[in-house]
Each structure stands twice: as C-alpha cells, then as structure tokens.
Image (cartoon, rainbow, N blue to C red; front, side, top):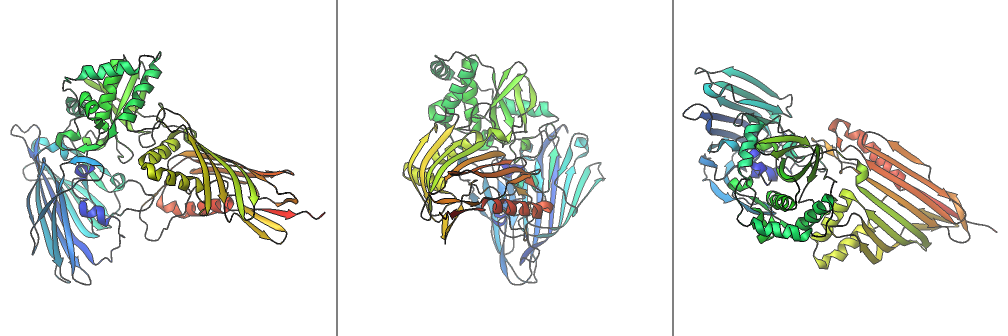
Length: 612
C-alpha cells in the first residue's frame, strides 16, 4: 500500500534513529538522553465531535558523560504534519527531503538539529509539531535514538472526545509505568513514565522493529472498522476514463482461456511481468491507488496501482475481484484491534467465489497462484464489499509448499568431488531465487548462478549451467550444473576422507548473543531436501559412514541418513523450518541446536583401500 511507516511511528524513531539503530545499545554511551518530555494535545473540532488536529511539544535533554560530542535530534514532517518550531543551543534547524531507496516519490522531509553537548552541561532540543490531518496520528513509539534515562509521554484528550478516544499498548516492558487521570476541565490524561530505555538497534535476523518497539496506538479518529473502511475505500472510487483500454487488453489476453483459474493466472502473471513495481508515498497517494488505465499506460505502479490494474482486468473477464488492504509481518496488530491506517502497509487483490477467497499479490512475482508469501500469511485482510467490508485472514500454509530439492551424482577425482548437481525450486524458494536472478543485470546473471550453485564450496568450479522454468508463468525452476569441488576429499595413507555436505544451506546458523537485545527471526518456513550418490573408487570400500541424525523440535525438523553398497554411498537429507521465532531467552538453546546440526552436516565418509 506504500503507506509510510514513518508516520505510523510518528517521528519518535527518527531518521537519526534509523542510523543509530545499527549501533550497540548500552547505557554507557557517551551521549545519552537524560530526560525526554512529549506532550500530545488532541484538539477537538468546533462541534466537539471529532479530532481537528494534534499539537505536539517535545523536549529532549542530552548529556555527555565523558567527552564533548555532537548530538542530533530529528523529526519527520510532510504536507499533513508541520514543524512549527525547532531549536537547540548554538544551531539552527536544517530541513531536508528524505526519500527512501526504491521509492519513486515521497513527500516526507526531515527537520534536523545538530549541536555540541559539553561534558557536565546538559543541552536541550525542542520541537513543536502539528498533525493537521489526524488520520496520520496513530502511533507513539517510546524508544528514542539514544539511551534514555527518563522519559514522560502524555496524551491529553479533551472532555468531548473522552468517550471516543482510547489507547492500545504494545510490547511494553517493566520499565514503562502508565497511569490515567482526569484534568481540571474534564480532559483525560494518559501518562507514561519510562526509565532506562535502551535505544532500539537493528540486529542480525531480528523481527521488524516496527512490530517490537514499545508503542502506543491512539485509536478513535475512526470509530470502528466501518469508518476506517469508508475512509480508505473513498480513495478507490475515482472514475477511470481509460478503463476500456484495460478491458480490451484483459479480454485479448484471455481469449483462449476456458476456465476461471486460467484467466486469473494469465492476467496475474501479465501484470507481474509487464508492470514494474515502484513505491509511491506522497500525501494521499499513500492511500489512493493509481487508475488502472494509468498504471497500464505508464507500465509501473506501487502495490495499490498494481492491485487496481489487476482488479480491473479480472472484472473485465467476469471475475469478482476486489481490493484488500493488509499489513505484512512488520505490522503486529489486526484491523479489528486497531482500526487505523497503522494496521496496514500493503494492498493485494482478492477473488471472491462464493465462500471461497483467493488472495493475489501483484508484487509477488514468480509465486504460483494460491501460494502466499509468508510475509502476509496469517495476516488480517480488509476486503472490499460494496458499502461495507469483509475481514478474512490469509491462510497459513505448510512449509512443504516452499521446497528446495538438490540431487547430486558425484565421483572422486584427486582432492575433488566432481559430478552433476540438479536443483529444483518451488513456492517461495523459487520466488526468492528467480526474483534475485532477474534483479541482476545480464552481465552479472552468470556470476549470480555460479555463486548460488557453488555454495558452500569456496573453491568450486561450476560449468555447463542449464536453467529451465525461470519465467513468471512456471511453477518449478530447475538448475543443472557440472561441479568440481576442490578440497572436498583428503587422502591420508590408504584412506580417503570425504566431506559430502549433503544439505547446502546457511539458514541454520548460530548468533552472537553478546549485547543482543532482540529475539531471533529464522528464515521463512521451507523444506530443503537432498539426495546424494557418491561413486566408490575402484579398489576402495566404505570404512565409516556417519550415524543417522534426527532432530524434531518446535523450530526445525531434520534428518540425515547414509547408506552404502559395493558401488555407491548414498545420503538422503532433509530440513524443515517450522517456526521462525526464537525468543531471546531461548537463544542459547537455539545456538546449541544449530551447532549440533552443523556438526552433523560436516561429518566425513571414510573410504579405505582394499588389500587384495
């Protein structure tokens, strides 16, 4: 949907935070926030019925603990959020555009203050902002871009709106204390006191920050999902003067299709192949889908525009297609829990056929129809239904839908394993591979394939690459290569030690837990399988094969089994990722599992010369 998450996190996690999130979060940083005070004053309309605007006053007091150092304070704004005042000692505010990579146009801007903080002399930055469009006032994040000793957040709700405005608290920690009281004029005052809050940081393989940072959702601008739906749906009602061109193309593309399934597949794949995805986050265009005819004319669109075109094309051939607003896994809450734009960041299509609903994501190229990206599985979709709406969850699907299967026939040549590798990909495994392959320039495509098929052998030589099924319309992608893997065999005396590495993946890894503060997010659910055959050299026999390895826990299920006869050693191995979240307090347990798995993969086969 290209609705910018910056505004859902209000500005509390600012542009500076996005940089400093990558640093360590320690209370002994030189620059810390000694005190922060944020006051959000909700102003009622003249008839006292709705929110007219929200005034924000924010003060941040910095201290330098060891040496003088420059500090930075930054706030976002756009055409609906104004920076009324910004000040800090010895500096003037700097105003800049802020355009993320991959976004065609974004009207977000930054107001930044950079100033020197002397050791032992606190310095305070101040901001005054106004949310002139209250639909943008949705979320208050309680973490700052610096370690924060004390922070107070107040939300002041006028008496006339007390019955309609409420808050939902998420990911709260013991260092956050909340209270609610009535003011002298009958207003309701929500107060949050935060102590010793670490700055949120980006960490390897962690959940999305937007889903884990302690935060407050302010709800009530939209009374319920119906009111929110009316607001969002109003952006889709613009007449399309060029719709006949869209209809004509849809009918031409499906002229030989005999079933609804064929029509859906043909049109979806056409949009994915010929419409380039480019995000647009500009004012109301963060909500308003581009006209279907305009997306067709320009040959690009964001998720809303692609969904708009796909919906129009499907309707043109008699299919009940509807827009659906949805939040990816970066969004924790449901529409029904928090009826605001903060509960969605994406748009897809839905095909309604009686009681059956098929979800189609125009941006999910190379994913077969009926397979859903893990990023939206289990998420609640807000679906068009005329003047009202429907809420349905995207089904959770088995990891078996996403398979990476490798078949190898190998022989020993000196210190090398040589032979043929055949790799077959389906589901999201195929989507990830094909998307990466097609992102590369033609000049780098071969390098990408060489790197992909040689992993984890650093000295492997890959040749005779053959690939099939890499178009958007295919269901399976297959790669076949000749491989020479140097260093895979060691000759010692009359023995050969062979490291087969039957499952060639780096998705099961250990993580550095020193100073880590976030849970671990494993790769998306999938299945890896391998079937290896190793020819036994003439004059040799098997002296040792690794013992069978089995593990089945809440995160993974894995099996490695070797066997042999007089001619060959075979190995069948599999790995299924079932659950992707490892809580931080169980990360040591995960690391132990990952080490054991790695040891099982690296076990060697021993072949000994036969004494005749």
